[in-house]
Image (cartoon, rainbow, N blue to C red; front, side, top):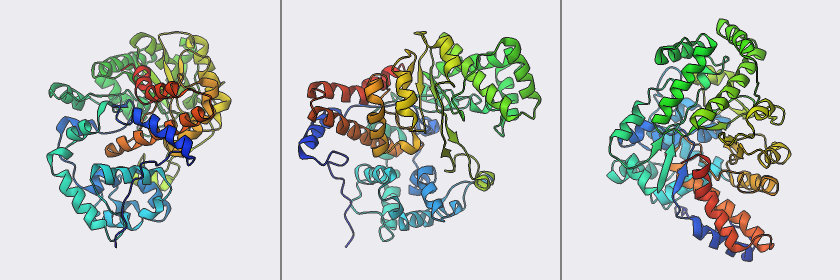
Length: 470
């Protein structure tokens, strides 16, 4: 007999009955609040074209590095999972790829991916048996049949998920045609973009010089000179703001910032453009551009997001064969106090600026990030991110930052995902964890339950809206 798929209503709530009862009540106040998804990597073409998704593999497996990262660690080749390589799309049969995934679904026991997928399978597709080798075809066919119906088109799912606003992330070279198409369509769904300039900011990026050339062609600026380069950023930021952007995003190796003189900037930029660039100059250039992005935010009001600390593409062979974002990124120690000081010395008290800090280094929560955000008016803490976007990771974030930074120097939750159907699942997990944390404070008489309910509502809805100026 097939094993039943059951989502327990008390999942992620405390085991203690008294605290669990409080968590239930708090969760009841936030369970159905609209979703604010202010940072993520979904494809705007889904909502512009509103075409049906293809099949379970194309929608749920092939785009999700959380899934194929785990499978790859157990020796499953990416080519057999439908993952595209540098040579082009995978030639794996989607059904065979799904069967392979199903045979290995036990690998995800205890992981957040298991929670998210169980939510999707049960609540989105109405499946009631556990995914395994025997149920693989049933899953593939049931999901495929659903995806061919109107209620499973991207816009209908967006509305069904009760998403109030969803932000995508684009390169400065993106023409933003999909966002303009959404705006002109008459659809009421709010899908906005985010300015992510890494390809023209990181001299160690393999596409940097070609991207810089395209940057100049797109903006009509001499981007091989420092002033023209900065003006090109200003122009593209303005275009992004017209397409709905309220934020920028910066995925640098470190959080380092620099405040060089204009003459020093010009000399540094000349070395970067001439190449080959030294590691020291590459790091200094990224640091200076981060400073310049903050200066530009004073004028255009875009909120800065700094996502440092990922050693990206650690697996050289995989990078050469499959390219970026294939699950081979690894967290590393990240320092913030000295790194951010040049920027904060100049702009840390300016009410026009808002910076949201993220980390992959949990040791920095209580030592650096909470004290910084608990003091500087321009700083807020982003939620537990990437490898730590998990029940225990979300809980550790609250435990290590709340007593110093409070709740109101954080920005609620954002899902930061490419996997569209996991968005409500991820927000549900975050809401349950926050309610569990708050319930403990109530049970210990550290917080009144009415206040805890207000905090839960703020974390789920009001704080992300305010932090991202939505």
